[in-house]
Length: 399
Image 1 (tube, rainbow, N blue to C red):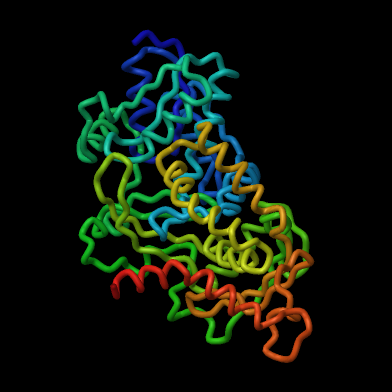
Image 2: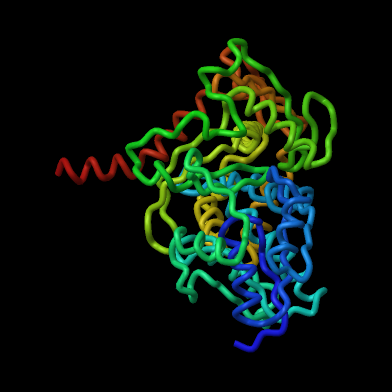
């Protein structure tokens, strides 16, 4: 492949540090190391320094946090998106924004190729590359894990040692992890055996439910058309609001998940996730919908959630079908405005109160006391008409 310049999605870890040097040697061209800040805890100065020391022509660090929350997390949560009934798509939602920025940088830097550190076994290779193809298919794509012979961690470490690449290794924490403002995931190590319980010291974003406060925490979340806009009456920008949700939910042990999921490439994989703020937000949002959303609209919308979530999980964020579903989902959110009061206690969160100017709940109709708006006698005909087919079938069976 004839390549003039490459933009590499770079984290500073073992894989991308080796890839950075390998790309420069293999293709004999400049490599721009690009790191995306999507809310992970990093020493960005150290990453910049390491990138330059290991062969990068330039290191670019893009702060994507606000955009990530506003344009990726919030749209997915307006849909109540969840994969296989449990996973809140933390990694899946981050990949398209990282890929989009990578393409922008490639254009700005005059690069004709992009590269990533995803392996040939995982979902991320698909997510990155579908993002590239969905934005600019003219860019060449280099996936080292699919073409080189450094197919093990041991070989990577030998390469790193040979090229004087500093690689932090720890036998105490052998997990592969991915972090952003929505979640942190853990894979590998002792987690590869699904019988093993995760170590408590692995978790970073939440306390264990056993060590959470003995008194419940109450929090009020205001929504406007499906988006959270305020906490306890204080309006906040998306990033600040989501950061606050992470903090209060994590302090109460909320958002831990141990999941065996089905990867897009076909294998099952075990992941342990922490999604404190996202777990709290989804519960509050769904509860407000029960107050403000029409029954049939909700049934139709709910039937589309698995398809939407699978599109996101499989990497089709920049696809016409995802965009079509997003418009449909967002149409359902026009009435989802109001306030939900949530109770947080030792790993659990549930709504204990809700109110809205868009409320479809009318006490005058639902009351068990005397009313003058509902004629109970009407229910007789309603039941007979709904039971007509059952009556006919019973008569046929009897004959």
